[in-house]
Length: 321
Ligand SMILES: O=C(O)CCC(=O)C(=O)O
Ligand SMILES: [Fe+2]
Image (cartoon, rainbow, N blue to C red; front, side, top):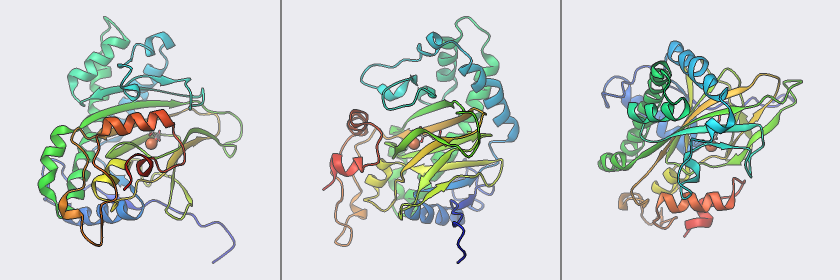
């Protein structure tokens, strides 16, 4: 091997032959094998997903998200949630984050009524139809990818019968994020969101125009995500999928670094399980003794929030056997 640094890349999986509304059809089985392999090895992958078309992305980011972050802070702060659900609303200028990060969230379900309620809170009395159409159009497709991946994981591990109940219980947080540019040289990157694992089952990241997501491999090397196509999304396994699969899936550490003078926007869909997280009996045996105690996602999230985003194995600390 030469002296130059190896250019690591995330596995790329092509979803163009997968129809989320027809599980099992087309390329489903072949893609499922790649998904299970990528999540076991890396805990994430680059999904080529043309169902989220360039027009939908442009309407979403250029039409809706940029308009949202141009709002004054007091409007954004109306996106609150109850104190016991700190990760379900506006985040910005807060402990553990740089001042150069802020985000807003639509919570619980990716449904037109939720998007409408969010828009009406931001622009009371406004004509919010175009905003709602753009946000729901993007979020719905991202959620369809997330559901397909969840189904594939359960099928691929031989436990498809658990999918429907888990799905029914799932809540979603659709977070739109804005990272200020540090200015200057694009090489002079600054960490804008520190190293962490997600508390979700699955997370899907859609980044706009400016790169910045970095994922750590099991060997401790950092992969700087460069989208393989304009239709790329990143699927990341969270600690709850790791727990539910009894450690068969990695939940990779990741962070966001931004350089140069162009702001970065991204959208992140978190799938949060409402059912108690306990590995199914089929995934526990002598070779795979239980690794984590049964627990609720709400309790795990509170634990993570209380301890902050850090480079530590929160799941093991919280419920490791
Ligand atoms: O904005 C991104 O690319 C990812 C942010 C992230 O990792 C998170 O919000 O958990
Ligand atoms: Fe994350």
